[in-house]
Length: 160
Ligand code: FES
Ligand code: FES
Image 1: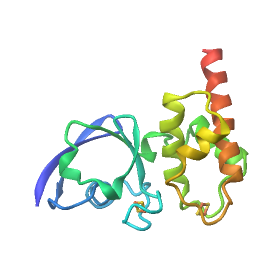
Image 2 (image 1 turned 90 degrees about the horizontal axis):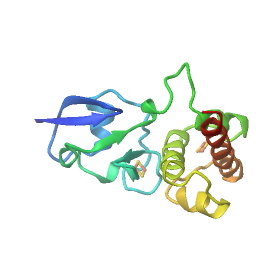
Image 3 (image 1 turned 180 degrees about the vertical axis):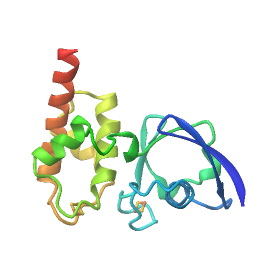
Image 4 (image 1 turned 30 degrees about the horizontal axis):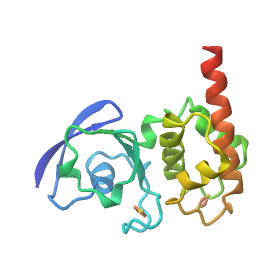
């Protein structure tokens, strides 16, 4: 094991990892951040999506030891359990959550999109969640939720 320093949700924390551990494993087993879900571990499902330096990244595809100095954001850094982010509110309001397993990853993809493009088209939303699989919803309400989130965030900015 070696110690890696990871900047997660604005806090630098140390955790022991094996050299070949993925970020997904370091988050869940090292740091106890289990909001990031483990689906396939082969890059196919998107349940493990996090944001690294502004980009949505499948955390099962990157090694933790390579990420010192990078800014990592996980679902725990989006809402705090008591106060939901506008994106999370929009998912609930649009009826986009069924079993919920894909949702943390969906929200991280949505956040990465909306951070760089506050007014996405429906096509841009669909492209942004290209790597996120959902077995329950058929995606329609998820797309609606992300467009609703864009509206909510826009209103928040307007209201100052
Ligand atoms: S667990 Fe990473 S893409 Fe499925
Ligand atoms: S809500 Fe069940 S997998 Fe998406």
